[in-house]
Structure formats: structure tokens, C-alpha cells
Image (tube, rainbow, N blue to C red; front, side, top):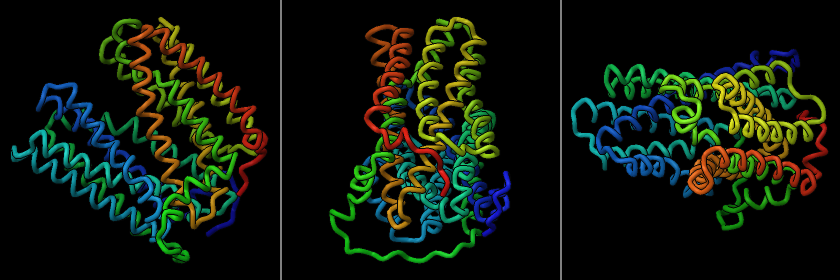
Length: 406
């Protein structure tokens, strides 16, 4: 691989470019499928509770398989694991397409297929995360993770739009297109050429199974970064209440809700591309705490705003500040973790992220029911600021990190 450190040299690394293409294709496919599944599930049942079951069917595999995922990712070729997962996802999307076209898809089979996709994603996401350090030189890792984040944000913007547009034709059109994109991701991963040396395989034991958790606990900077994100997102989950803001506070229609949902992803995409071109080079720890504080401030501004443009701006800032924290955290975790541990550590890391997103939405709903919508969002933003201030004192090792140079 090239050792060039020019600003865009990460794009000269062919393995990473193929990885990025696979990440974009797989993420867009997943977002498209999620839109179609949600719409079709409600059309089949008319039940909000069933929509909750669909979300649970996607979350439970990640929660239950975390330890197994990490163990597999540290013992076998991560490219092969990703390709197997993308093949399973393509087959699941194909089954949804055939089931929708022929009429045999019912509520039970829909849940089963969604759970299969969730299990495949549970293996794919941390494996892909742990694969990046093997694709680029260590000095380019922060840029690589910034571009990787841009892939996810691009999918978040384009996927739901494409899924909704294709659903007008038919559900099968969405699922068939998603299946094709999953296969495209598989092809990109198959084209990656890199030297992979099988790590020493310790005998399976509870110690090796829980090694990822033990490693994170032994590294204050990593533990601080992951837990900071967990609590910040947990408390600042304002996006769960966007439908209420769109209808009752900002007085817009569905078009306004669409803009509000896209605004954080737009801010995150812009910032991730900026960080890919101009990576952070100093005061990284303090920058991360500043980004989390900005996330809290943006949450408060959004919570108090009654002007649509101001609310959009606050959500763009929220997404931009969040991605700064994401890039720093991902780079830090992978740089500080030995390659033979990256699968297990990444699996625990992804569980933290998934848990914070899911529970953050739940926390926002409960708080809004107890105190009202606006107080709930403002309390969440204040809580994020409090956590950032507390973590500065609890994790000085994270605060004092100066650079992410690999």
C-alpha cells in the first residue's frame, strides 16, 4: 500500500476504495429495505405494536450475538465474514421480493426474515469496522474513518428516499433493488486484495469470549470515549420526537418532517468529508469533549426553537458535532486495539452504539410523556452537557490525547 500522506491519499488505496463502495452499497440497501419493511408491516397489520416488534427483531440479534460476533471476527478472515453476511442479506431481500410479489409474505414470515437480516448485520458491522486498519497505513486511519462515516451518512440520506420512490412501483421493486446492492457489496469485498495472516487461536474459553469487554475496561481512554458516546446519545435523542415537532410545534407537513430527518445526516456528511480532507492533528481529546458539548447545545437550541429554519440549522449542527465524536472514537478504538482483538472490541463497541440509539429514543419518549416534549429535549441537552463535564474529570487520559497519528 502507498505510504503517501497527501490530503486525499486514502483514495489512492484501492482496497479502501473497494471497501468504501461495499459500505455504501450495503448501507443504502439496508436503509431502502428498512423503509419498505416499515411501510409494508404497517400495511399488513395496522398495528404500532407490530412496528415495535420489527425494530426488536433487528435489535435482538445484535444484542444476543455480540460476544460470538467478536470471537468469529478475530479468528477468521474478516473479508470472508463480510461477504457471507452480504450474501445472506441479499437472499433475505430476495425472499421479501418474492414473498411480496407472490402474496405469501405474512406478518410472521416478515418478522423471521427481518431477524435473519438483523443477525447478518450483527456480524457484518463490527467486522467491517475492524477491517479498516488493514486497508490503509496507520497515518491515514482518521481520514479512512471519516470517509467511512460519509458512506453511512450518504446511505442515510439516499436510502430512504430511493426506498420510498421505488415503493410506489411495488414493494418487490425495493427489495429486488436492495438485493442487487447487497450483491454489489459482496463483489466489492471479493475484489479486495490484502495479505491476511491468521492470528494465533487460543482455545475457546470464557476468558477469550469476554476478552473484548476486559480490554475496554483496561483502557481508560477507550472506555471513556465509548461510554461518553453512550450517555450523550442516550440523553440527547431528540430525533425520536421529530414527528411531534413537525406537526405541533413547527406546524409543517410531512415535507417538513422529511427535511428535519435529513438535516442531521446532511450535517454529518458535510463534516465527515471535511475531516477526510482536513483530519484532526492536535488536541484531539479536548476536541471530542467540545464536539459532545456542541451536540448538547444544538439539542437545547432545537428543543426551544419554534422557527423552522432555526430548527433545521440546529439539527445540521447536531449531526456535524456528532460525527466529529464518531470519527475520533472509531479511530482511537482501532489504533489502540491490537489486530487480534479488534473483532471482539468492535463488537462490544457496536453494541454500545446500538444500545444508545435504541434506548435514547425510548428515553426521549418516556421523558416527553412525563414532562412534555420541549422540556424533554431541553433536559436531554442539559444532561449531555453535564455528562461531558463529568467525563472530563473522570477520564483525564481521554481528555489529554493530543493526536490520532497511527
